Amino acid sequence: MEISSAGAGANALFWWHNSTNAALVSSVSNFLEDFWIYTDNTDGVQAFEYDPDWYVNGYKYDMSIQCDYADGKIWRIYDSGGHRWVAVSPTLPCGWSVNTWHHVQLYVTSNLSNHTYTYQTLVIDGKTTVLNATYSALSNGWGPTIGTEAQLDGNSSGVAIHEWIDKMTLTVW
Image (cartoon, rainbow, N blue to C red):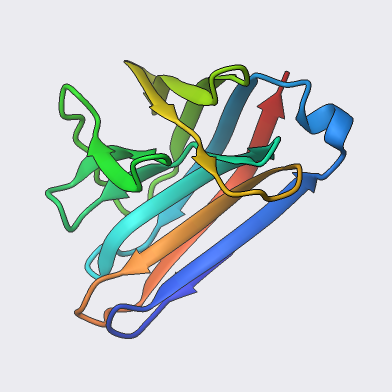
């Protein structure tokens, strides 16, 4: 899949909702997002963002990661309940080398009884970082859904960006 963005502050979003089956959606607690990324240019990038999403029992578990170029090329994770991005600690650098495929894997667990999710590990090109960061889900009343998103955020330069994503899977159990 190719995502592209051009123009100052332009963004591009791909989303895919895999299931809205309530029984299936409420029976999982483990999420493994796995994909490959390739880009031919990073001059116009503000951030590359990837979001396994889970909506269940009126809560949104937005288990997002972001390679944030605007904030110093660091990985950040999303705190749904706090509506904020948090730098991975210890600070984990990011930044794709262009014209090269990179492999990304994110493993997250959840707890329905207390409406939390825990970022367990982030693996970039075979290098594992233990995250062990827990956040609260956001109460929003939405119906049951499991899905994933990829977002390409452009910076103010307006330089065109192209991102290719391959073999994206979201495995749940």
